[in-house]
Image (cartoon, rainbow, N blue to C red):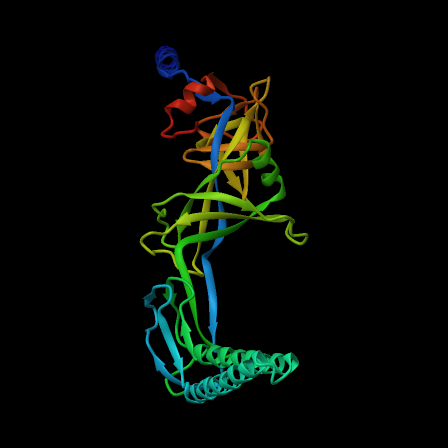
Length: 358
């Protein structure tokens, strides 16, 4: 009898304990995820193009006569004004030739004057006077040629610019056509960059922005904006690109011939689809988003990015305006998982990001 009562008592205790545990268990609440859609709007993006920087004038200075380099009046890297004497090739031979030509002009000139007096007195014929005149003209032409050769021994700056390094040294024997140095006019710079065919067509369709910026090799913007002045006539058949040329003022002579950098060109986009960067994830260098279907199931989808701005991506392909994409908690879900969500309007989501996308 005592054993029966003990058994009933234990059962009562266990039953009460089991009931109490069921009451104490908390109910699991399913997480509600934030979901939004792509925002469709007109915007602009800044596209970078690798560029080459050239002086508006960059020429080779070469010897015009053969001889020894007698004097150098400038230094490497020096700014020289137009007309500055830069090099002197030994002029002795050409000075002698000029003196000889001057003497010949004087001699033939006297002969011509005597012949003219005789012709005026009808002592000699007019044909003899014409012959004397021809000899004088020939002597004058030879004097002009000798003076020209003598001038060629002096190499002067054809325009104001900056000297490059010397290809010859003082006392060197130079031949006609030998390279002495190069001279660059850096007051303005021509910057060349290649644009793909599709972007060229978009540029022309929107009457393109003529103002561009230059990002220098140290990742700093050049302080003066440039202007797109010309586009080459033909596309490169191998690359499918066409060359643009922008002109930049260079009053401080900071830019030099041969530098590289990147042109930043503002490109307008019509009806662009914009999504937050945080709504994407990457697998094997491809971008994905989680799309919520009509049954609230999570599906991953591959997307193509057209442009990247601070905190946002412009989507080229893979999404439509009405698609619902997971905004947060991407690591907390798995493929084909059913979720509960709260939908946020895309314009409010984008406006809360720290960006400027107008």
